[in-house]
Image 1 (tube, rainbow, N blue to C red):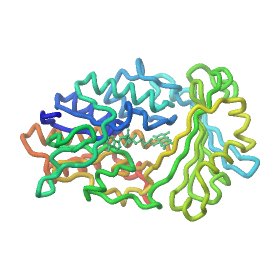
Image 2 (image 1 turned 90 degrees about the horizontal axis):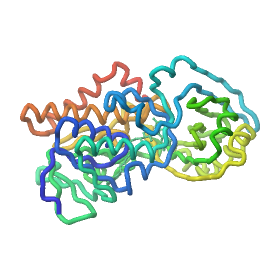
Image 3 (image 1 turned 180 degrees about the vertical axis):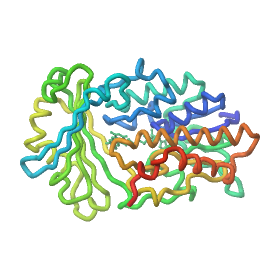
Image 4 (image 1 turned 30 degrees about the vertical axis):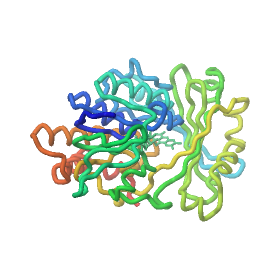
Length: 368
Ligand SMILES: Cc1cc2nc3c(=O)[nH]c(=O)nc-3n(C[C@H](O)[C@H](O)[C@H](O)COP(=O)(O)OP(=O)(O)OC[C@H]3O[C@@H](n4cnc5c(N)ncnc54)[C@H](O)[C@@H]3O)c2cc1C
């Protein structure tokens, strides 16, 4: 039974949760982080492109020790027909070279490393622990959480909800609404193992160079969605995602779409002879700036995908998740260091700081 009281409880150890737990622990706050997976990243089997500007602010030495697959030097866009594609290639040899800030990472490895940084900073992480309920007092103020590990409430001054897009805690407690099918996309992704040399030859890469292909056109069968291919060190990530409402309307299955994408004559030569390692499926918020839910209340804030912070850039979501994971703790810390309580009124600072954080935050988050 955990009797002690925490300054903050962070629910989830994905990108947003890790950024938040790290920011607060570095400020000397007493932080408990709860993750239902076996370890941080175990629920996010995916290759991903990471814009690293916020990561650099949180861990300036990340280039020396983070498990980075490749630095991105080339972006390809494919407009696909049933058996062909029109391609556009943008290569930036100089720009991502000296202090690269855009990398391809494999989430389970990267999140595990990020989580070590959180623990080194002094936060307590409990994995294989599902938060089953937000504990609220009679006035509706969130005072802590209940978990599947023990009876009773674990108390904290503030609960940071970083439970991802499908997070049920916030919706069950009536703090936010469940996204509707036209507000989320379902993405499926596979990892294909290939020798490093083969990948570098097929994608025309040297050493740590990386390439991303984004593909639109007939592969999404008329639905809103796109496919992607990332060249990692020794595997290729390949996936496709479409709006859930479109999948419901058409009866198309995500796996059927992925299978067709893999069998496309433009894709076959890239993955030929590979060994399928992993398959995963995940929702992605697509609701846009104007439908961002309430981000704070008495005793709680919500960050990352749980806050439906989508990004205009397909690959900007991790960064946006980390922006909120950095700013919410700054707001909480300011409130607490002035001796204030984490009320709805005082935590409105988070939304204000989020809005002011980037001149282009509205542009970063899609408008629909
Ligand atoms: C296939 C795919 C490819 C993607 N590629 C990219 C990309 O290239 N670049 C990019 O920027 N973004 C990409 N994204 C989006 C990116 O993965 C998300 O935006 C990001 O993971 C959001 O981080 P988060 O921390 O908010 O949520 P998550 O990473 O989903 O983390 C939430 C965590 O909370 C835990 N959790 C949930 N409920 C509970 C509970 N009740 N108790 C305890 N723990 C709980 C989960 O286990 C999980 O670890 C991709 C997404 C998918 C699906």
